[in-house]
Image 1 (cartoon, one colour):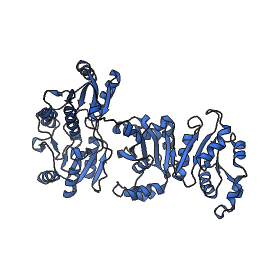
Image 2 (image 1 turned 60 degrees about the vertical axis):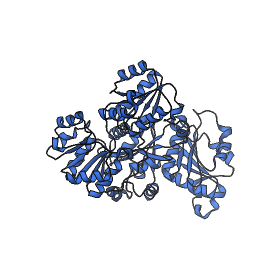
Image 3 (image 1 turned 90 degrees about the horizontal axis):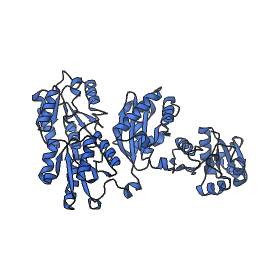
Image 4 (image 1 turned 45 degrees about the horizontal axis):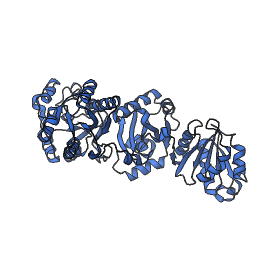
Length: 520
């Protein structure tokens, strides 16, 4: 793209010079700018002009892209007479003098102004302001780190897998982001192009600033020794959006790391996923499985609403039946059976309070609700606000099976898995080790463990809640040297496990997500 960078003040000219130098754009400066000491000697590098409006009218169609370093109001007034069509007008972006924002002003999609804004942001660190509806409605940012020479196909597969783990589609990502040192990485550039996503490179100073402001964030000494900062994917995902919270923390995929963050925006306030129960009308189906489900069901009961609460497990049925009696349904829904239940019971609203890891039932419920034309409301536990744990003996993996491989690599001998009775494939990987499993005290749970080859004396069948003290006692009693857990948040006893592991000085393997096919 043939591009010009235009400035009319000394400060603006300094910024424009940096942009032009990094992007190869032509530099256009108002003559009076050259009087400042900071710009001495660059007159021969710039095209100078006396009047801005007249100059812009001359060059408007000579360039494919125009980068104005000045106020948006000036830009609007100057370009207004030349605007004809988004199919023929050049891409126009506006960058403030100090590098706070870079705004896609004209020809965002067709002319490439959106992409140009992201390119300029990679130079100055300014936040790209892209207001086209397609991009504005995408709330997720994806940070990517990769080894030198990684192929585009590998990167694409890693991003797609990360999106599955985060419970989103690639189409929900607003942009990819990586570190400044990856700006010439062919595979990454190709991957972004094939996925149709904008790619932003985060300057070194912004990543350093992220770690200064987030001292508990996970750090890699290896990465620090290589490029001078402690990480790539996670800080890049976080700083490339506004008011971001982590959805998927740094996760490795064979030499490629991916992290995903979600922006918390005003729209969330006016279009809350979980409405107050008093606003709901008609018969309600509450997909249960967490403590949040109990709270929502209690509110529905207090409001006198007609509802059913479902669970797929014996434990869930017993828990809910104590308070909600005959309204409790034990059912492991298929798409067909859920559709039938909704039709027979006259359900008008489905509230999904299943566990965040129970991806199958969530996707199934969304599809059925859309097909039946009824409202789907997510009341799932929010994992996005979890704090980073300051403990050096933590490893994060993408699945329980990956956790088993990490245990092998670390030389761990007596791990305790607290990941449930449905994900027991790890036992094949850990043959020869003393593997302990903590599950609910139900026959089907114990039977599943025995069927997977776990010895009866190594099955801890207990019902929580589990305090840090109880976890510590179990660790010491069974001489455990590693805890394996999902990142379930405070409601799932996650932090009590971390506290116990830290007290005992043992490893913790955290499964960020898992393709669990049950609804708890």
